[in-house]
Image (cartoon, rainbow, N blue to C red; front, side, top):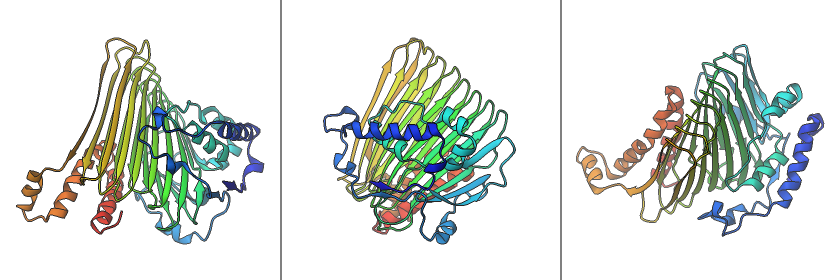
Length: 427
């Protein structure tokens, strides 16, 4: 994959060294093999990324993409990227005590602060090679640092666009909250055109400081000929709350790896996802709830509605360290099969090395019953609409846990758009 980089001459030395080391690590790390447990049930043919090009620092005509970058409405800040290049920024409504910058700019103005938090966790769910590729190629994204005791009332909204055929992007989101602070960040990923193949290797660093609240939403709505690897890494300190919600409606193939590390007593992590694959789409989801400290709580809820020949994979592990007593950890994956040819594979797991814990995990797969369809049809609803209403209601349980009405409405807007396209014969 070739690249041009307009920012490389301004990056600090530590970042350039990290990128160079990551490039060597990427080249030395073997590609996943069929017998790798972390890639069980995966379609490894999707990992052939030859032919994609990164156009860092370059963006095509973009005025129409700015106008299409509509989201939640009222925001504290709004940034728009095309091919990892910032084309629009609104930050005048940010309160004092918050740094909100494109990552390329933050690397110049706050290099030490970025270095302190940039990609600190070990990538352990199978995509170490692609995390290294991201680190070698990353040049831009979002950097947010919220000072102690600062609350950001409205969300920070970021739009990431892929424009041009066979274009690859490497967006990075780094959010750090100080003590007793609060922020919500929304990333929206889309394609400029419906039929141009794209590639996204995206990475999130979310670090919730002591007694802070960090909410993050990722809406993946690329076109159906784009492939995606998204790696989410979250850490929560003492009494912190970290909530991450992922929506998958786009891409031909998407791999989500989500790791949550609970590092202090009273820490809480909520891991939520809704995925709606149709036609031949495949979504591969891997999660790791890592309880390092005693007295912490994690709760995972993933909901998948599968149509046509779609396929999902879920593999999740709750891991409780020695000494992490009084842990509460829950993991649930539910699959709604909307056709006889859809395929859902689920592998929940537990590994407990402490005492006095409450841990549970489970997965279910089911189809809509004839009785449910009959009930709605008897009230004047046609069968197709009845199935869509049931699938929407199935997704709402996870959406409602976002806990913010405007953010929930935004997510439901993308969900309803996907259902409308399914009803119309597209994905």
